[in-house]
Image (tube, rainbow, N blue to C red; front, side):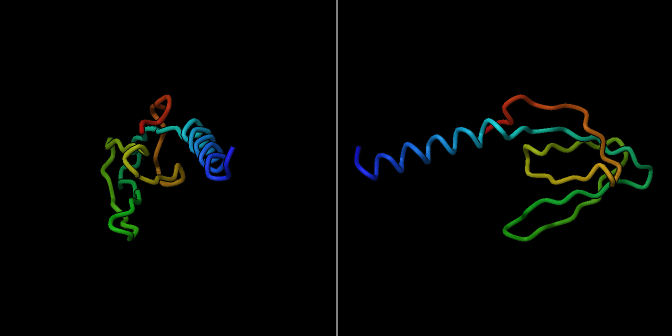
Amino acid sequence: MTRAKVRLVAASAFALAAGLLVHAEDYKCTEEAGCTAQINEDGELEEVTFRKGDLVSTEDGWVVSQDDGWVKVKKKPGGGS
């Protein structure tokens, strides 16, 4: 096998393994005052405040902390693309 093929196989195996480890999760805001979440918009981290009862998904790029009132409500197998 040539070096290029070996690298391609190794990179493919790494990408497959990384994809299997990623799981998308849905979170619900439980705080009366709202919950904050962050998302990367055009290379800049933007913080957004959500109302109690709002849902966000890590599949869509949201980063949440359970210390901020977020509660996991669903785990999606495979985590999407």
